[in-house]
Amino acid sequence: METQRVWSEKLRSFLFNSKFVGFLFVLLLVGLNILVLSKISYVFHPIEVLFKTVALPLLLTTVVYYLLNPIIDYLEKRNVKRIYSILALYLLIAGIITLAVTAVIPLVRQQIASLASNFPHYFEQFRLQIEEWLGSDFFEGIQETLNFDPAQLTANISERASSILNNTWSSVGGIVGTITEVVLSIVTVPFILFYLLKDRKKLTPFALGFVPTKLRDRFLTVMLEMNHQISSYIRGQIIVSFCIGCLLYIGYLIIGLDYSLTLAIVAACTSIVPYLGPAITITPALIVALVTSPIMLVKMIVVWTVVQLVEGKFISPQIMGKTLNIHPITIIFVILTAGNLFGVLGVILAVPGYAVLKIVATHLFRWFKARSGLYESETANR
Image 1 (cartoon, rainbow, N blue to C red):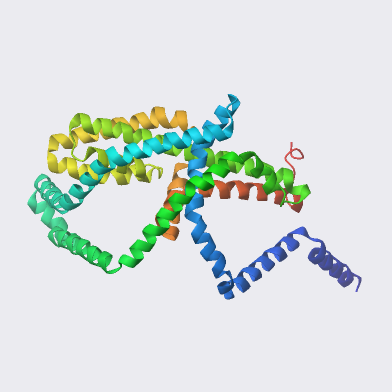
Image 2: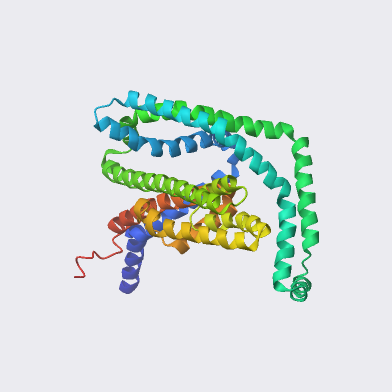
């Protein structure tokens, strides 16, 4: 009887006094809340619409903010008022945009139209060149083994392009709505950015006002780390991508590759995605160079190799450093997963999103270790 009473007290103490059981109970409540909210998701439809409406303007504004804010801060240290610095930068950006619209965009549009119209021909020439290099018998064996017909693939590409064009004309309303949404988002960016740059110092106290007093120090630490990670990544990746585009454009001009400006711009845009972006970008350049001549292909590979070496050995270490401290394999898996879940936007936001989640998870785990009592302190083990 005494033994039963002792075990009963131990069980009661474990269930009601154990921090681990309390943690499991909290997880259970969180799961139940998620289940209930998933059943009444229609209640949050207005919030979803609001998020979709403001997501793109806020995303664009955040990127531009992290690019311009260091310049504004530097000028402010030089006793230049923020309002004057912002206005001067706006005038400079307006001049650059005007120059791009009048000089660069017509050339790029012409090259893109020419490349799009000639790409099926380039692809067919690429296939014939590969077949000539490998030998017709070997190539036919691969086609039979893989049940792969290049001619049919070319026809499918043409049919798909025609289908996309027809669907485009049949859904002009949807396209106009999308274009209108993007244009409105771009138009609102300067206004949001102006007040964000102007009132930057008021943002942190405003956010801390919603946090309980005892948690403000920890919350401020998390905010500072997140801000450092995001700002370093955005500025560094955009600068690196711009350098890659400029170097490739210079290299393509030297070797005389067709569509050099368009291919360099595509390379700069896709290089925003780490590791996978350059691998994707090289494909159209390879096809154009191979169709031009085998010598051009060798020149293009040399230019690409030199640019990648310069970027990997000099540009990225100086600009990016080790700001994220994330293993390359982890980055690749994160990008692939985010791409499958959220599409192109997920690919772009995968790395900074993972960095933010990593910071939050790290601080939550440290808080859990300190409060749970399940982990011995490192000083006690020494």
